[in-house]
Image (cartoon, rainbow, N blue to C red; front, side, top):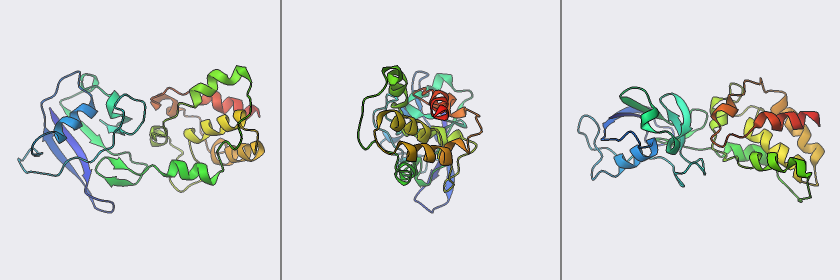
Length: 224
């Protein structure tokens, strides 16, 4: 199988495409494919040139951490959850997420997600009991991996602007239903950094690897 990867040697360096040939099985994931390439004694491109190992981020490889988020054949996804059997064509294209600064190759800097939460004081200061009717949705919203896929597909999210995206909305919901302090402040932050900028395309729900029902979080907060 031919693999085409958009590479970048360091932050600030130009990006370039590099192609590889690799033996692959249909039941292999894209993460497994990247591991196989890096596992070669010498990594060579299609021209036979020895090149540096592919820099990418991974941890659990079970769809539970979100580290391996990238763009595969034009679609944002977790590399450990995309099987080669489900991809069309004979060439697999792999790119880093486009909405975040590239550190090297497929590794990006997603710290903006946490910086936005910090700026909005979106954290639980003191836990208080919550309505049992909210427990199922609290559990669902709490599964957010902060992988960045929801921001990658969002038509409204741009780094440096005041719209913070679906991950922020779900955290605002959790804080509003579980924390005893600064609820009014969180609701104001939700209005400023999410509700006023969301166009309701809901692509964030489609791409979410944890299938978080963000629309329900929005509805519950909007009623507040």
